Amino acid sequence: MTQSWGYAAQQATTPLAPFSFSRRDPKEHDVAVQIEYCGVCHSDIHSTRNEWKNAIYPMIPGHEIIGRVTSVGSAVKKFKAGERVGVGVIVDSCRTCSSCQAGEEQYCEVGMTLTYGAQDKYGDLTQGGYSNNIVTDEHFVHRVSEKLDPAGVAPLLCAGITTYSPLRHWKVGPGKKVGVVGLGGLGHMALKFAHSFGAHVVQFTTSASKIADAKRLGADDVVISKDADAMKKEANSFDFIIDTVSAVHDLNEYLPLIKRDGVYCQVGLPEEPPTVHMGNLLFKRRNLSGSIIGGMAETQEMLDYCAEHNITSDVEVISIDKINEAFERVVKADVKYRFVIDMSTLKKA
Ligand SMILES: [Zn+2]
Ligand SMILES: [Zn+2]
Image (tube, rainbow, N blue to C red):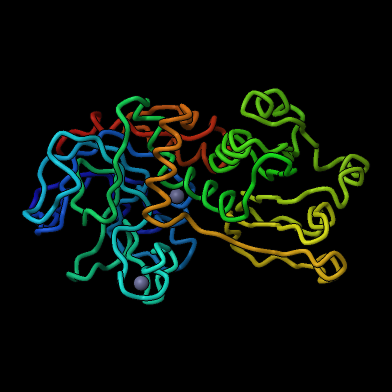
């Protein structure tokens, strides 16, 4: 076994605290990674606090992982020691079902294995990236360019691919009018990608204080969603809207803004189901859709695209001992736009 340490939640109501555990020794297809940076995703908070009612403890969260390969199994061809790599939200899937065969491992019919808080095929509890190392099958490890700031790359593994994938799937590009709802970790990446793909991008926000930042991040226009007249002016005009908000909110304010046959895509996961007035879908044949992360090939494509176009997340780097404070600030949306933990600050417990 590989001796490991990190910061874990022991139960839903306790703060994260130092924790020692062990990981499997690398098997023939495994890559062992020393973790350099790990992003702080809102899911980490939902999960460690058992807000999705499926937590298994002790739980080390973290699924936006950047690090360097320390060793590889005998059958690994793709990676060698010393290379910079990333690990995202999932670490295994069945590899044989129709979704896996299509390169959409995140929709595995048997069920994907999450990077933390899940039981893997060896019967071990998976533990995430708020730790010194990780051992993962090479299929779920991605190459990361040395050209980019590794702290800014970490959030691409969840926030990045979660927005990149639906924008690509629904063919966002030149000539398309695209809306982004919410300007947080996901929203700021959606802005950067939609702008980079050549679309006309409109940020929706409740707060006028975010206008300048939205424009800096790639918005052509900003609409204050509380301004009913401004919202009315946008009716039937959008090809695509990506909704990154995970708090409960009213989709019926946004659906009428979609043009005929356009798509409203939800990537935030509110705790309570929304009410949708079906008339908002029927009368313009509008589509209400959802999406989670992306497949492994697409995640690599996204990372390569970011290296080529110099795209990273806007981050605030913290030391691991500030993690509980950071969680509170994420809940209050008080971060621009993602916390990333410098894992060199993690000392052996
Ligand atoms: Zn995430
Ligand atoms: Zn599968």
